[in-house]
Length: 131
Image 1 (spheres, rainbow, N blue to C red):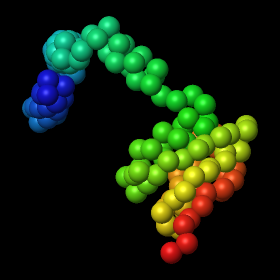
Image 2: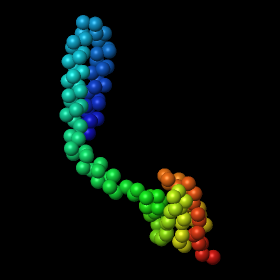
Image 3: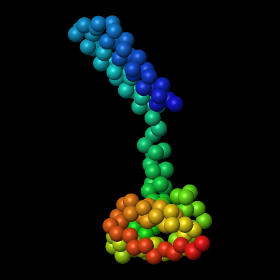
Image 4: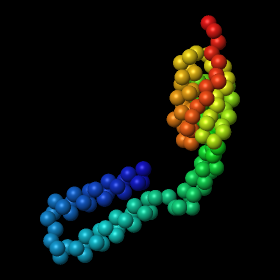
């Protein structure tokens, strides 16, 4: 919220200065206003130390292996809720195994795997029950 307020202050100052037809001699005043605005914005931002902790925690949570990335994306998709997948990878080739409820769910799982970073090929070994 403070960042938004600081941004609005900067925009208001710019409009005020442009609208008042300032002269080249007003450069010192403009520089002082700029320094003041930068100080306000800097004060509104959280310290780097407070930002580093959550960023590092998030970075630790991100999967690094290809099969972990695919598995986490499949688990996060609401359309595939309740479906258990076995995901293995050999380089950029990912193999999907499991029983999916419909052919549409099967296509969804394959599409998600194909659009995951690091995946070059998807081998579909999933089964759809016969109705």
